Image 1: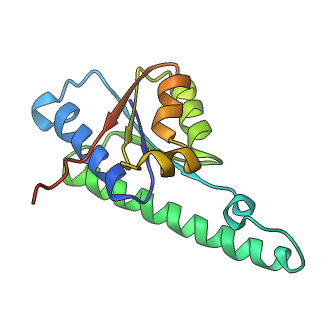
Image 2 (image 1 turned 135 degrees about the vertical axis):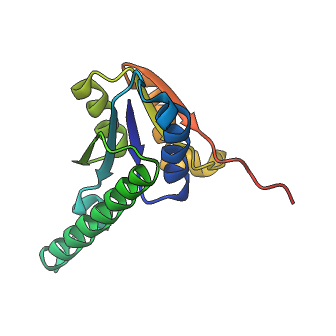
Length: 153
């Protein structure tokens, strides 16, 4: 099972949900092994502009992206340890999350890909694109989209 994570509350909720439902201590004979994947964007795609001084900015952006990736991975490991799940593989892939997750599915011969739902509206989803939608259509395995329940007021 490959679980895609980013620095969002939704992806960490999806990770916890999967751990609670598929990797509980009572289910010690889980049919899944756990692979956690974070996609670190390329620095150039994060900046979105080019021109004089770009060469000075790129190394700093790359360093920031590495720090974010390390923080995300550390938090994911802490969540797993808190749920008594120690047998896992953690990877950081470079590039667009859609491609990184689909490649991880292929690499690990995953039978399931799990992603959190950001809950974007139609306009935001059209502009930003939906990682979960792309993966549902392109990953060579089942895709589970975990939605965090909305709090009723």
